[in-house]
Amino acid sequence: MRKNKTEHSGRFMQTSIYLGKFFRMFVYQNDWKVLPMAAVIAGLVCFVIGANLFKTQEGTLLGSFAVSCICIWNGFFNSIQVICRERAIVKREHRAGLHMSAYIGAHMLYQAFLCLCQTIITVAIFFASKVSFPAESLVTGYPIADIGITIFLVTYCADMLALMISAFARTTTTAMTVMPFLLIFQLIFSGGFFSLSGSALKLTNFTVAKWGLTSRCIQGDYNALPAVSLWNSLVKLQNVEVLGETPVRDGLIYMQDHDMQKVIQNWTGQNNQNPVYAFDMDGLFRCWGFLVLWIIIYVAVAVIALEFIDRDKR
Image (cartoon, rainbow, N blue to C red):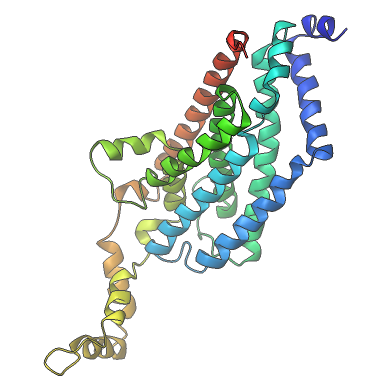
């Protein structure tokens, strides 16, 4: 009966059947555990970098990098094992008439639900932690909504990348072995936190992290923020003695007495601007567009990979 049912079900019906199965797994097989894990990770990040996010250039860059870590980590764990753990079942049902596009389509809808829940949880944790969101919005009119869209797209894109890997991996062990390397690649080649040049810089275009980090720096109006690294370095050097004197401390005292701290920090920020992070709608849409493009590519490759699952002789 199962074979006949599968053979005569169209793609829409098969998608509905599998979607129902995934939601039952969410309830009865504890797949919901990814949601509290997302809350814990977001809380830890807010505790460490929340105070400076969207307030200084350094805090925004580091915070954007950390948020990218949250999104990629959540996305990877959502789907890295979902196909390979039932590969034998998928192979059998494909021979009975399962359309792989319907199967992946069901995964896409279910994973979109998980990513949306994780996005809402992450934004809520940020709000509860009193993270200072940008004052202006480029798209929706609500900065928190713009940030939420970026978090969702980055999480979902990472999710679809992991789904693609799961479609290739024949065992859950293989998938979990590959995942750390993918995570390291995403973080190293994020394009903002580590200094890259030449061919290494070009590799950033192939990462999810690069477009997520850039989006948040754009939304946070990175170029209009002060830079505090120079001032903090001077503070660290204030006790250095030169010929029995402390010139750095004397200079700091003079600047503080004349309210020059903010002037110095703003001047440093103006000379540390990055055109890529300009507060511009076109730049933001470009980042979102690349995330959507990679989602489409990952999904297409996953479907193609599963179409050849019958060649798996194991």
